[in-house]
Image (cartoon, rainbow, N blue to C red):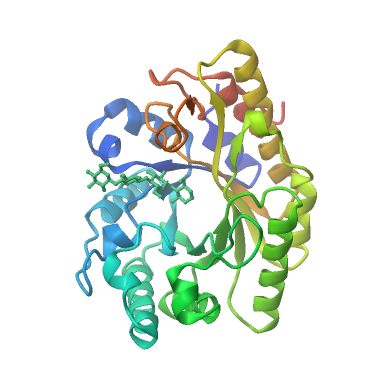
Length: 318
Ligand code: G3I
Protein backbone atom coordinates (compact mmCIF):
# COMPACT_ATOMS: atom_id res chain seq x y z
CA UNK A 1 0.00 0.00 0.00
CA UNK A 2 1.01 3.61 -0.44
CA UNK A 3 3.87 5.09 1.59
CA UNK A 4 3.27 7.39 4.54
CA UNK A 5 4.26 10.49 2.61
CA UNK A 6 1.62 9.96 -0.04
CA UNK A 7 -1.16 9.71 2.51
CA UNK A 8 0.19 12.65 4.47
CA UNK A 9 0.38 14.80 1.36
CA UNK A 10 -3.19 14.02 0.48
CA UNK A 11 -4.20 15.24 3.96
CA UNK A 12 -2.15 18.43 3.53
CA UNK A 13 0.38 17.40 6.20
CA UNK A 14 3.99 16.40 6.26
CA UNK A 15 5.29 13.18 7.74
CA UNK A 16 8.93 13.58 8.65
CA UNK A 17 11.85 11.70 10.11
CA UNK A 18 15.05 12.73 11.83
CA UNK A 19 17.98 11.20 9.97
CA UNK A 20 21.38 10.24 11.34
CA UNK A 21 24.44 11.07 9.27
CA UNK A 22 26.25 7.76 9.35
CA UNK A 23 23.54 5.38 8.10
CA UNK A 24 22.40 8.05 5.68
CA UNK A 25 25.86 7.89 4.15
CA UNK A 26 26.40 4.15 4.48
CA UNK A 27 23.23 2.06 4.42
CA UNK A 28 21.08 1.53 1.38
CA UNK A 29 18.16 0.10 3.35
CA UNK A 30 18.15 3.19 5.57
CA UNK A 31 18.25 5.55 2.63
CA UNK A 32 15.51 3.72 0.77
CA UNK A 33 13.01 3.92 3.61
CA UNK A 34 13.97 7.50 4.43
CA UNK A 35 13.39 8.51 0.83
CA UNK A 36 10.25 6.50 0.22
CA UNK A 37 8.20 7.03 3.35
CA UNK A 38 8.84 10.62 4.41
CA UNK A 39 8.38 14.01 2.79
CA UNK A 40 10.22 16.04 5.41
CA UNK A 41 13.55 15.38 7.11
CA UNK A 42 15.38 16.80 10.10
CA UNK A 43 19.08 16.33 10.88
CA UNK A 44 19.29 14.38 14.13
CA UNK A 45 22.62 16.06 14.92
CA UNK A 46 24.25 17.49 11.81
CA UNK A 47 22.85 21.03 12.03
CA UNK A 48 23.55 21.56 15.72
CA UNK A 49 26.08 24.14 16.84
CA UNK A 50 28.83 21.65 17.72
CA UNK A 51 28.54 20.24 14.20
CA UNK A 52 28.27 23.52 12.27
CA UNK A 53 30.57 25.88 14.20
CA UNK A 54 32.87 23.77 16.37
CA UNK A 55 35.31 26.62 16.79
CA UNK A 56 34.49 30.27 16.53
CA UNK A 57 33.97 31.45 12.98
CA UNK A 58 34.93 28.05 11.50
CA UNK A 59 31.79 26.72 9.88
CA UNK A 60 31.54 23.07 8.82
CA UNK A 61 28.51 22.07 6.80
CA UNK A 62 29.43 18.59 5.59
CA UNK A 63 26.72 16.70 7.43
CA UNK A 64 24.15 19.44 7.01
CA UNK A 65 24.74 19.69 3.28
CA UNK A 66 24.54 15.91 2.89
CA UNK A 67 21.11 15.94 4.50
CA UNK A 68 19.91 18.87 2.42
CA UNK A 69 21.17 17.21 -0.77
CA UNK A 70 19.41 13.97 0.14
CA UNK A 71 16.19 15.89 0.70
CA UNK A 72 16.52 17.74 -2.58
CA UNK A 73 17.06 14.49 -4.48
CA UNK A 74 13.99 12.98 -2.89
CA UNK A 75 11.63 15.94 -3.09
CA UNK A 76 11.58 16.41 0.67
CA UNK A 77 11.48 19.50 2.81
CA UNK A 78 14.08 20.12 5.52
CA UNK A 79 13.26 21.33 9.00
CA UNK A 80 16.40 22.92 10.47
CA UNK A 81 17.34 21.75 13.96
CA UNK A 82 18.52 23.63 15.95
CA UNK A 83 20.08 27.10 16.28
CA UNK A 84 20.15 27.94 19.98
CA UNK A 85 20.21 25.18 22.55
CA UNK A 86 22.07 24.58 25.83
CA UNK A 87 23.20 21.13 24.71
CA UNK A 88 25.66 20.19 21.94
CA UNK A 89 27.02 23.72 21.96
CA UNK A 90 30.80 24.09 22.13
CA UNK A 91 32.57 25.25 25.26
CA UNK A 92 33.87 28.34 23.51
CA UNK A 93 30.32 29.68 23.25
CA UNK A 94 29.49 28.89 26.84
CA UNK A 95 32.43 30.80 28.24
CA UNK A 96 31.83 34.09 26.38
CA UNK A 97 30.74 37.24 28.16
CA UNK A 98 27.37 38.79 27.40
CA UNK A 99 28.30 41.08 24.51
CA UNK A 100 30.44 38.47 22.79
CA UNK A 101 27.90 35.72 23.38
CA UNK A 102 25.11 37.78 21.85
CA UNK A 103 27.17 38.52 18.74
CA UNK A 104 28.30 34.89 18.48
CA UNK A 105 24.67 33.80 18.58
CA UNK A 106 23.63 36.35 15.97
CA UNK A 107 26.54 35.43 13.74
CA UNK A 108 25.87 31.70 14.09
CA UNK A 109 22.22 32.17 13.15
CA UNK A 110 23.09 34.44 10.27
CA UNK A 111 25.64 31.98 8.83
CA UNK A 112 23.67 28.77 9.33
CA UNK A 113 20.25 30.08 8.30
CA UNK A 114 21.82 32.23 5.61
CA UNK A 115 23.53 29.26 4.00
CA UNK A 116 20.16 27.71 3.15
CA UNK A 117 18.02 30.83 2.85
CA UNK A 118 17.79 30.52 -0.92
CA UNK A 119 17.49 26.75 -0.89
CA UNK A 120 13.85 25.82 -1.51
CA UNK A 121 14.18 22.56 0.45
CA UNK A 122 14.92 24.26 3.77
CA UNK A 123 11.65 25.71 4.97
CA UNK A 124 11.73 25.99 8.75
CA UNK A 125 13.97 26.16 11.80
CA UNK A 126 13.91 25.31 15.46
CA UNK A 127 15.30 28.68 16.49
CA UNK A 128 15.40 27.97 20.20
CA UNK A 129 15.18 24.53 21.73
CA UNK A 130 14.18 23.54 25.27
CA UNK A 131 14.23 26.99 26.86
CA UNK A 132 12.08 25.68 29.73
CA UNK A 133 13.04 23.42 32.57
CA UNK A 134 10.77 20.59 33.64
CA UNK A 135 8.75 22.85 35.92
CA UNK A 136 8.00 25.38 33.23
CA UNK A 137 10.47 27.99 34.45
CA UNK A 138 12.93 29.42 31.97
CA UNK A 139 15.89 27.08 32.08
CA UNK A 140 18.95 28.55 33.80
CA UNK A 141 21.20 27.56 30.92
CA UNK A 142 24.38 29.44 30.04
CA UNK A 143 22.26 31.39 27.56
CA UNK A 144 19.88 32.56 30.26
CA UNK A 145 22.55 33.05 32.87
CA UNK A 146 24.64 35.26 30.58
CA UNK A 147 22.01 37.09 28.54
CA UNK A 148 18.76 36.81 30.47
CA UNK A 149 15.63 35.92 28.57
CA UNK A 150 16.34 38.48 25.86
CA UNK A 151 18.36 35.84 24.01
CA UNK A 152 15.09 34.23 22.91
CA UNK A 153 13.69 37.29 21.14
CA UNK A 154 17.12 38.16 19.75
CA UNK A 155 17.48 34.68 18.26
CA UNK A 156 14.13 34.90 16.47
CA UNK A 157 14.94 38.36 15.12
CA UNK A 158 18.30 37.17 13.83
CA UNK A 159 16.70 34.16 12.14
CA UNK A 160 14.05 36.33 10.49
CA UNK A 161 16.76 38.66 9.20
CA UNK A 162 18.75 35.72 7.81
CA UNK A 163 15.77 34.19 5.99
CA UNK A 164 12.57 36.22 5.86
CA UNK A 165 10.70 33.26 4.32
CA UNK A 166 11.61 30.52 6.79
CA UNK A 167 9.08 29.39 9.36
CA UNK A 168 10.57 29.97 12.80
CA UNK A 169 9.75 27.59 15.62
CA UNK A 170 10.20 27.28 19.35
CA UNK A 171 10.56 23.62 20.30
CA UNK A 172 10.34 21.70 23.58
CA UNK A 173 9.47 18.39 25.24
CA UNK A 174 6.73 17.50 27.72
CA UNK A 175 4.55 20.20 26.20
CA UNK A 176 2.35 17.87 24.14
CA UNK A 177 -0.56 17.89 26.57
CA UNK A 178 -2.08 20.63 28.69
CA UNK A 179 0.17 20.97 31.74
CA UNK A 180 2.18 23.57 33.64
CA UNK A 181 5.09 23.49 31.20
CA UNK A 182 2.95 23.79 28.07
CA UNK A 183 1.05 26.63 29.71
CA UNK A 184 4.34 28.40 30.37
CA UNK A 185 5.19 27.87 26.71
CA UNK A 186 1.79 29.24 25.73
CA UNK A 187 2.31 32.36 27.85
CA UNK A 188 5.79 32.92 26.42
CA UNK A 189 4.67 32.54 22.80
CA UNK A 190 1.74 34.89 23.36
CA UNK A 191 3.98 37.46 24.99
CA UNK A 192 6.69 37.23 22.31
CA UNK A 193 4.14 37.69 19.55
CA UNK A 194 2.56 40.64 21.36
CA UNK A 195 6.01 42.24 21.29
CA UNK A 196 6.34 41.58 17.58
CA UNK A 197 8.94 38.84 17.93
CA UNK A 198 8.72 36.62 14.83
CA UNK A 199 7.65 33.29 16.36
CA UNK A 200 5.70 31.44 13.65
CA UNK A 201 5.51 27.97 14.97
CA UNK A 202 5.53 25.79 18.08
CA UNK A 203 7.13 22.36 18.00
CA UNK A 204 6.00 19.65 20.39
CA UNK A 205 8.83 17.16 20.50
CA UNK A 206 6.73 14.17 21.52
CA UNK A 207 9.20 11.94 23.33
CA UNK A 208 6.62 9.65 24.89
CA UNK A 209 6.89 6.47 26.95
CA UNK A 210 4.13 3.91 27.31
CA UNK A 211 4.88 3.43 30.99
CA UNK A 212 4.13 7.11 31.71
CA UNK A 213 0.77 7.22 29.95
CA UNK A 214 -0.49 9.31 27.07
CA UNK A 215 -0.44 13.07 27.69
CA UNK A 216 -3.76 14.72 28.49
CA UNK A 217 -5.58 16.86 25.94
CA UNK A 218 -3.09 16.81 23.11
CA UNK A 219 -5.55 18.06 20.51
CA UNK A 220 -6.84 20.81 22.82
CA UNK A 221 -3.29 21.85 23.56
CA UNK A 222 -2.45 22.10 19.85
CA UNK A 223 -5.61 24.08 19.29
CA UNK A 224 -4.91 26.65 22.00
CA UNK A 225 -1.56 27.41 20.38
CA UNK A 226 -3.18 27.50 16.96
CA UNK A 227 -5.62 30.06 18.33
CA UNK A 228 -2.64 32.34 19.07
CA UNK A 229 -2.01 32.37 15.33
CA UNK A 230 1.00 30.06 15.22
CA UNK A 231 1.48 26.89 13.26
CA UNK A 232 2.05 23.80 15.39
CA UNK A 233 3.81 20.55 14.62
CA UNK A 234 5.10 17.40 16.28
CA UNK A 235 8.84 17.49 15.78
CA UNK A 236 10.48 14.49 17.49
CA UNK A 237 7.90 11.80 18.06
CA UNK A 238 8.96 8.50 19.54
CA UNK A 239 7.30 6.15 22.01
CA UNK A 240 9.67 4.16 24.12
CA UNK A 241 8.98 1.13 26.27
CA UNK A 242 10.79 -0.96 28.84
CA UNK A 243 12.55 -3.73 26.94
CA UNK A 244 11.95 -6.38 25.83
CA UNK A 245 9.21 -5.69 23.34
CA UNK A 246 6.10 -7.81 23.44
CA UNK A 247 2.80 -7.84 21.59
CA UNK A 248 0.94 -5.91 24.24
CA UNK A 249 3.56 -3.14 24.46
CA UNK A 250 3.71 -2.89 20.70
CA UNK A 251 -0.06 -2.50 20.61
CA UNK A 252 -0.03 0.22 23.26
CA UNK A 253 2.76 1.99 21.46
CA UNK A 254 0.78 1.85 18.23
CA UNK A 255 -2.20 3.56 19.87
CA UNK A 256 0.09 6.38 21.11
CA UNK A 257 1.39 6.96 17.60
CA UNK A 258 -2.11 6.84 16.22
CA UNK A 259 -3.45 9.29 18.79
CA UNK A 260 -0.69 11.82 18.10
CA UNK A 261 -1.25 11.65 14.34
CA UNK A 262 -5.02 11.89 14.79
CA UNK A 263 -4.59 15.00 16.97
CA UNK A 264 -2.53 16.66 14.28
CA UNK A 265 -5.05 15.70 11.62
CA UNK A 266 -7.81 17.24 13.70
CA UNK A 267 -6.10 20.64 14.02
CA UNK A 268 -5.85 22.69 10.83
CA UNK A 269 -2.81 24.59 12.04
CA UNK A 270 -0.88 21.37 12.68
CA UNK A 271 1.51 21.08 9.75
CA UNK A 272 2.65 17.53 10.34
CA UNK A 273 4.40 14.96 12.44
CA UNK A 274 8.09 14.05 12.46
CA UNK A 275 9.44 10.89 14.08
CA UNK A 276 12.83 11.04 15.80
CA UNK A 277 14.46 8.32 13.75
CA UNK A 278 12.47 5.59 12.07
CA UNK A 279 14.30 2.34 12.87
CA UNK A 280 15.08 0.93 16.31
CA UNK A 281 18.54 0.25 14.92
CA UNK A 282 19.31 3.96 15.35
CA UNK A 283 17.64 5.68 18.26
CA UNK A 284 18.84 7.95 21.04
CA UNK A 285 16.67 6.15 23.59
CA UNK A 286 18.73 3.14 24.77
CA UNK A 287 21.79 5.31 25.40
CA UNK A 288 19.84 7.83 27.45
CA UNK A 289 17.40 5.46 29.19
CA UNK A 290 19.16 2.12 29.69
CA UNK A 291 16.71 -0.77 29.48
CA UNK A 292 14.28 1.22 27.33
CA UNK A 293 13.94 1.46 23.59
CA UNK A 294 12.04 -0.02 20.65
CA UNK A 295 10.55 3.45 20.28
CA UNK A 296 10.21 3.75 16.52
CA UNK A 297 8.18 2.55 13.52
CA UNK A 298 10.55 -0.12 12.24
CA UNK A 299 12.53 -2.72 14.17
CA UNK A 300 16.31 -3.14 13.95
CA UNK A 301 15.93 -5.21 10.78
CA UNK A 302 13.86 -2.56 9.04
CA UNK A 303 10.65 -4.54 9.46
CA UNK A 304 7.49 -2.50 9.99
CA UNK A 305 6.02 -2.64 13.48
CA UNK A 306 2.41 -2.13 14.55
CA UNK A 307 3.38 1.51 15.14
CA UNK A 308 4.03 1.88 11.42
CA UNK A 309 0.63 0.47 10.58
CA UNK A 310 -0.99 2.80 13.07
CA UNK A 311 0.61 5.89 11.54
CA UNK A 312 -0.16 4.64 8.07
CA UNK A 313 -3.80 3.96 8.83
CA UNK A 314 -4.27 7.25 10.63
CA UNK A 315 -2.86 9.18 7.67
CA UNK A 316 -4.87 7.08 5.23
CA UNK A 317 -8.01 7.94 7.19
CA UNK A 318 -8.73 4.29 7.89
O1 G3I B 1 29.93 13.45 17.68
C1 G3I B 1 30.42 12.52 18.66
C2 G3I B 1 31.46 11.64 18.08
O2 G3I B 1 32.57 12.42 17.69
C3 G3I B 1 31.86 10.60 19.10
O3 G3I B 1 32.77 9.71 18.56
C4 G3I B 1 30.65 9.84 19.57
C5 G3I B 1 30.96 8.84 20.66
O4 G3I B 1 29.95 8.74 21.62
O5 G3I B 1 29.71 10.74 20.09
C6 G3I B 1 29.26 11.68 19.15
O6 G3I B 1 28.35 12.54 19.75
C7 G3I B 1 27.07 12.01 19.97
C8 G3I B 1 26.09 12.87 19.21
O7 G3I B 1 24.79 12.46 19.51
C9 G3I B 1 26.31 12.85 17.71
O8 G3I B 1 26.10 11.56 17.24
C10 G3I B 1 26.78 12.04 21.44
O9 G3I B 1 27.61 11.11 22.11
C11 G3I B 1 25.33 11.71 21.71
O10 G3I B 1 25.05 11.91 23.07
C12 G3I B 1 24.47 12.61 20.88
O11 G3I B 1 23.12 12.30 21.18
C13 G3I B 1 22.13 13.10 20.58
C14 G3I B 1 21.41 13.93 21.64
O12 G3I B 1 20.37 14.67 21.03
C15 G3I B 1 22.37 14.87 22.35
O13 G3I B 1 21.69 15.72 23.20
C16 G3I B 1 21.13 12.17 19.91
O14 G3I B 1 21.77 11.51 18.81
C17 G3I B 1 19.92 12.96 19.40
O15 G3I B 1 18.92 12.07 19.00
C18 G3I B 1 19.37 13.83 20.52
O16 G3I B 1 18.31 14.58 19.99
C19 G3I B 1 17.62 15.43 20.90
C20 G3I B 1 17.16 16.64 20.10
O17 G3I B 1 18.24 17.23 19.44
C21 G3I B 1 16.45 17.64 21.00
N1 G3I B 1 15.36 17.03 21.75
C22 G3I B 1 15.72 15.80 22.46
C23 G3I B 1 16.39 14.80 21.54
C24 G3I B 1 16.69 13.50 22.26
O18 G3I B 1 17.62 13.69 23.28
